[in-house]
Image 1 (tube, rainbow, N blue to C red):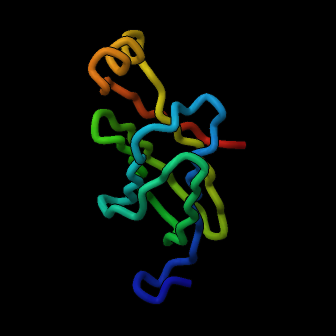
Image 2 (spheres, helix red, strand yellow):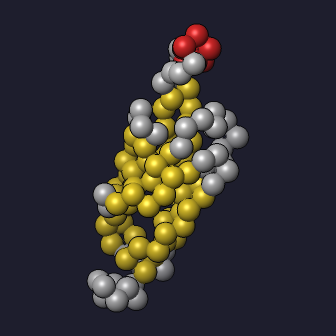
Length: 109
C-alpha cells in the first residue's frame, strides 16, 4: 500500500527494445506530468504507482504520444515505445544531419 495515498500499488513498465526502432534520440517518459526517465535503445523502466487513473506520455522532443490508463491493485501494465522515421526522415538526416523522428507507444501482452 502506498502510504502517501492509502491506495494499493500497481506498476507501469515501458520498454524500448523494438527491433525496428531507429535508435536515435532519447525518449522521455512522463507519468501524471512528472518526468520519470529517459530511455535509450535497449532500456526499460518499471515504476510503482498507486492503483487508479494515470496518464503515461512518451516524448522524443519532436513528437509525443499519451495514453490514459486505469490500474487495479497489483496490476502490471507493460508498454513498448520506439522512435521511427517518417517518409522523408532518412533523406533529411542524410542531407542535413537531422530530421523528424516520430515516437509511438503500444501496450504489450
